[in-house]
Length: 281
Ligand code: SAM
Image (cartoon, rainbow, N blue to C red; front, side):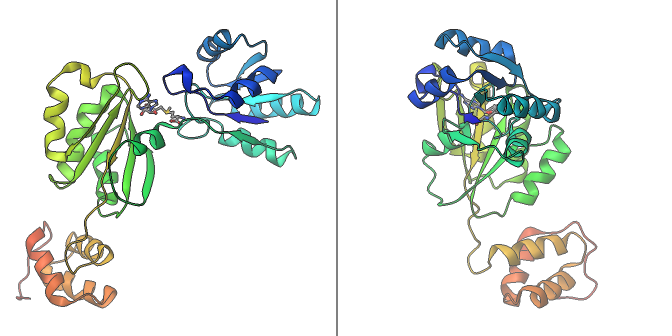
């Protein structure tokens, strides 16, 4: 089974190998037959289109395996980009492999990597986090949990949530940290801007068109506080939510071995909602 990456916008990004695989296929498994029939018309494909989406991946996989057993050539695509990346496909791939058939990837664009390549961010590592939760409270919680990570964080976001998502990022992340907003990649109105988190809401508000289309958000890596490493800082932050500063510093020191003065300075700079100390640190 060929897993075929398709364009995320510009149809010219369909590779020659992808076209050949789709033309050779007897059966193309896709997320939405209407979406893929546009591509089929564009390429003059003759394959039968079969909808295999998140609600029928198991039975869909069985159908594809039967077709493979019958000697038919099968390709798997999603609506756009790389199947199985924030898209259905992973279960099908696994089931087909487990049934003893070879799965051959035909690489194509994935919005996360396309955005990263033109982000201008210098951090060596990235974490693809996909879509954040839909509700603001849950979204902030996830952002809090990732705040200290020393790699670029890559998110997908839908246009109807972009404003509130950016607001939550501004609430949780330091104002000076760099954020890249990449919208409508490879399309006519493509925009890629890199700005401090504190300026992102104003950038979006300046033109309603900037809130339309498809978005990838990339958040630069956390910068380690001088002297205190990310693990020590994270440990102390968690402890400060439960304990008064003096206890939190003591326990964080026992766990991480970080210098007491640095931990104490961090605790004082951060403040805390936890019960205050009766005894001084
Ligand atoms: N499988 C796809 C891939 O490999 O990129 C991702 C599918 S996911 C359901 C769709 C999301 O990807 C969109 O909501 C958006 O966040 C992002 N995306 C897809 N195409 C995009 C584009 N042209 N520009 C910016 N973001 C895009």
